[in-house]
Length: 409
Ligand code: HEM
Image 1 (cartoon, rainbow, N blue to C red):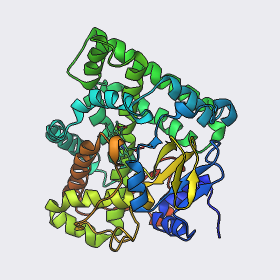
Image 2 (spheres, protein in one colour):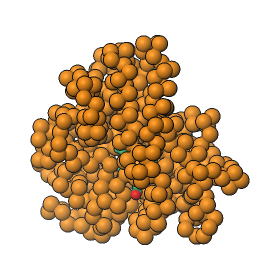
Image 3 (cartoon, rainbow, N blue to C red):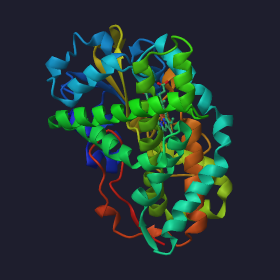
């Protein structure tokens, strides 16, 4: 039987065809597969069936805080100059809610969550609509655009920047830094590029925090700065790392929901027509795109203790990869799992994870997706691909993302 490697999980071929990837996993005839090495971090396990992944996301024995296992995953062992080595070193000093467990997780998430309630997010609807319209105003006359660069990328970055009180002129900086971090995750020769990108990114946030201390506003960054100054609710590094996480998670994921989702509609003209004619289907359509085209393909954890499962033992400290993308097309869970059906009623997908780390930005991502697809279909009735689908290229990185999506309209 064909052996899986760490590289298979993120390859452009996997990103292009998640269904075939799922079939390859299922063909191994084991529910829990061991990889000999995952990007220099040693052995890792991968789970991919919906019921397993769903249960494991909620299992308190599977933890996030890699600092607890550093003796086993020493930066030196991974090679201090590799991405993994740098990231381990960095996360050791810069914890955020996605890299820690309770009680720290509870404290850090509570502080940020006030700004991301469904009610707060719904209040942003008119502004997000305005941004979507302005982006299309800028290209409408041209009759063509790169949907990723001209629409899917700027929309979420403008929104999260406004939430965080980041000046408009600075937004273009983030893509370069984030791309370097994500690309380097699958290319171990990128150690120094990662270090540089992290340093510049964090340096930028430090300056932003100083500015918010001097001139506080009503934005989320000012709110977190005040929480920091009013007591010991979060440390300076936690504050920095939280803003960093919100910037990255707040844009790089939604870009790809919009890009991948639009491509899915273009490849399924019947579904696109139905959605254009029945905009009330938008919420369900976004859920279906999250299921089949979700940008985060894998969530990772560490075993906090030895865990027996499917006749195997995951040893304490070992890495566990949960394939959200494969679970989302598991035929045991979804009928016609490999069919895009925007009218699907039962859609318990795992694109936002589950349990205590369930995506904090899910209401925002859903709203951005609904507005983005709704506006594209309403304003561009003749939207079509400008190239053959086979010529589209997926990035080799941690996210399922298209390098570009040329369209005509
Ligand atoms: C389509 C877009 C998005 C997808 C698919 C997505 C997916 C995810 C997933 C799968 C997780 C959990 C990871 C794990 O369990 O290891 C997560 C966590 C998180 N997401 Fe999102 N996300 C999206 C958009 C956003 C946005 C717009 C924000 C904006 C603030 C955001 C903020 C976060 C944060 C802060 C966490 C950490 C939550 C915690 O650890 O408690 N995400 N996201």
